[in-house]
Length: 104
Image (tube, rainbow, N blue to C red):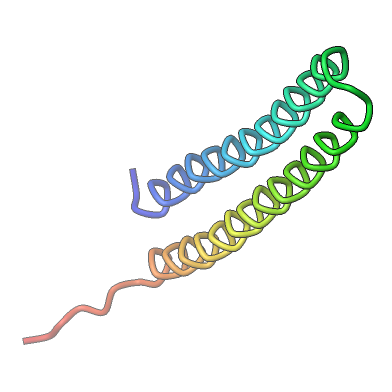
């Protein structure tokens, strides 16, 4: 197995890692939204409507802020993935250039 084959194999593995990381972030966002919405439905049965509206606004603010955090983290993952692509492209180029032999 040549060095370029190893680099290409590693590229597939790290791509898979980044894809699973992005999927995990998406699932966390969906899970968080679902949990907070179910909690809001549960609270609506026990709180007076004035109090519930205040709690609902607070939960919406929380959801928005957490969504921004997850989106920023996803953007960070994408930037790191681009940097890794550049590194692997450079490694592939290096592996394809023939070595210069030293003459004695």
